[in-house]
Image 1 (cartoon, helix red, strand yellow):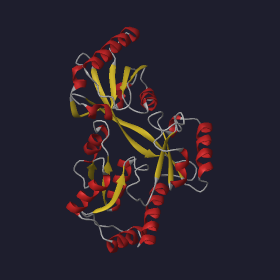
Image 2 (cartoon, helix red, strand yellow):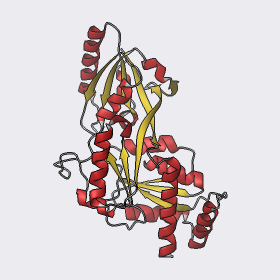
Image 3 (cartoon, one colour):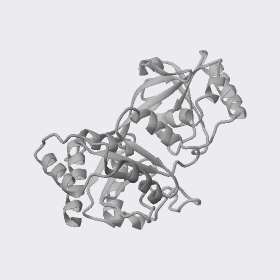
Length: 317
């Protein structure tokens, strides 16, 4: 979602600054840098996000209030705004629980496959904030909506609206686009390469189920999985485990399997996966898309974001 909003702001004419902690080896940061390379988006990494923001604002400056007013007026009239190197908007990655910085818009994303976890906060569960924090949210987005049932979606919507009746709810999914070989990040392998193939899904992410289901939907003939804990840094013994699992899958399916990892797994350590030289190892590249459901779609989502930001700006100014 951070990448989606960043690109939307750039397309609208604002230069965003992403503030992130860069947790556990910075795999997400590396992925963002790779995807946004060559564009105006700035990425600030550090536990003290206020200090990081100050450094970037000192270096690049920020769009002043009168210019922002002009930007919102032009955007309302669907006119073009010339992008500046000056920072026009700051995006906090995983920032709802980061109280040291005030914010104008709170967006909460919920994993539709496991929206509430076990109900406990980290480290005893996956929640970063108690469910009551939904009352502070301005927008809710149910993610992986394509992988859940209509009844599950209704249950999630009812729970969200139980905390805040008026909150707008949108829906998103990850859409696989292509793959690349770990030995050549510039390669481009069509998803068709997985059709009727045996695939071993290897991941160390928070939502491995969604990753595996997306591979199954490519038409792979046989799909096995090897899950590690979120943000796990692969080591030599893990590579041996992957190799053994791939050999077992090869015996079961009577064909040499393809090993597929996520971009986060690749960016955590691009070199170690090259040690699996007996197998083809591919990286799945996906992008977030807003899914149209009922009266919500990508245009209404973008409009809601811009309208909320403009409203907060005019009130504060």
